[in-house]
Image (cartoon, rainbow, N blue to C red; front, side, top):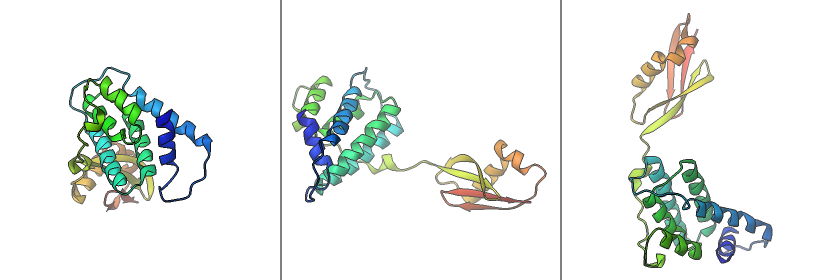
Length: 204
């Protein structure tokens, strides 16, 4: 109850702005807190988190840390909603990730955070917990997905290492099984690589 109202007031908009009061929006914050709580009502493990889980967590650490310094609480809550949705999809069971998540949400929902902090086995208060540190390396992309087109028509997508050069990309596209049905009986005029976006194979 108290945390729902607290989050709703923060979610309305920038602190310095005039905001319309509409109690219908409270339901959204309440549903989010229930979704957040549900993440912890499963068997949690001490295993190392996946790259995707760390990426989702560190995006949130970066966003919330910056937003608190600038009093932009409403955008922090939006970021929480996105992160929790991502972790649910990943079926996150990592105690390490969820513990940091509790610390991050404690300024926004202190009562829920305190309950979950103790549920995780901690004996001190979440207020004394160290604030999670953002690490840029978890946000560095190791791969990129490019759309493969033939004469300007998108046909499929293919993943490449982020540091792949154009020549490697061209060769892999032309050798891919999925390309063969579009290349059969055709002559490749040229292959155009638009960095990190699209590969267009011009054929005739």
